[in-house]
Image (cartoon, rainbow, N blue to C red; front, side):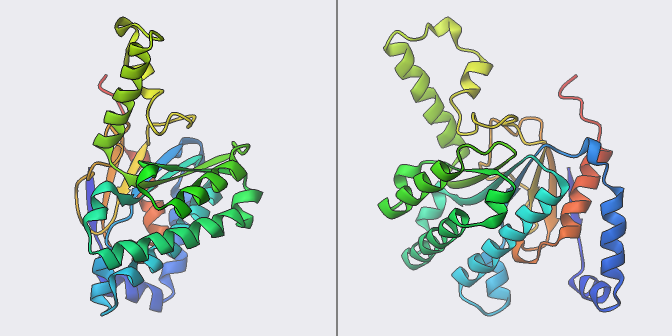
Length: 268
């Protein structure tokens, strides 16, 4: 587990001197594409704090963060990362001020509409899924979710998962309920329940590799906050002390380079 701090003045200096471009090129060459992570999860943290630091409204930070997510997707597709899971909105986030939640729902609606007509999504054949308790979302958003998923259901080159109204504990509870219902209906015997069967009832069961190899969290916080609790058992963690709107491609490259330098034993 690594926590990396970057002085903002140093970041600015690198850009001003033109060193940034050279460093980015060098970093990208450090990545072994044969050993890159197949699935990256990201906790998009720090939008509100970034907005506060800029004397802007909280939802303005979320809007800039949403644009950063689009860039992040393109960086990952360029590297050939097969699956990306973005933690966008938790079940606990519904407890935020009403105005902020409403602004977030409007932003989500706008971005889902963009995904429907995205050249990147269709050209790269990216399957989009929204994972979480979708029933908690407004009706108009639920319909958009179904539409985006329907439009991309035939794609299997890449996978983009948006964790919305998501909670890791809620996911496990929902999986347990589905299994309990199957037992009650006589479809399953309790003795048939094992880890493999349980995983088939999680939100990520559609992925070729549900467990993320690498999880990145921005903003300096060093915790998972309920993100993919089951799937992250052996994920490599990378914590970065920069707000999500300020995340750069070099941050992604450094995270992958760090991942490739670690020895993954999976408990062996």
